[in-house]
Length: 80
Image 1: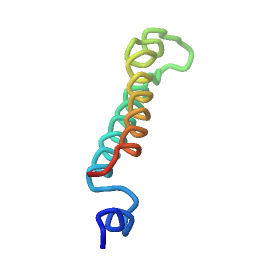
Image 2: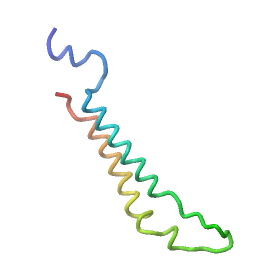
Image 3: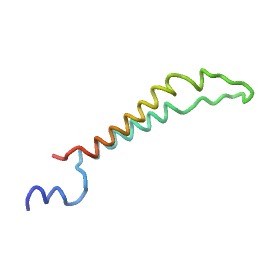
Image 4: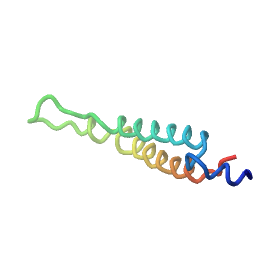
């Protein structure tokens, strides 16, 4: 059996691909966790610093988009 045939049997991706996919998933989840929160205990008041913080509108979306880009890389990476 040739090396090419061994690669096509079983799982479609290699072990390294699955590890990279897990890392990308953790990055995405971290981004969404950073985006969450901002609940105000008093519904009659508005605190813009809670909702419009740099963490929620800049850092978290960059992490989420970066995580999805990392996932694409993890899928497309050629298995050795």
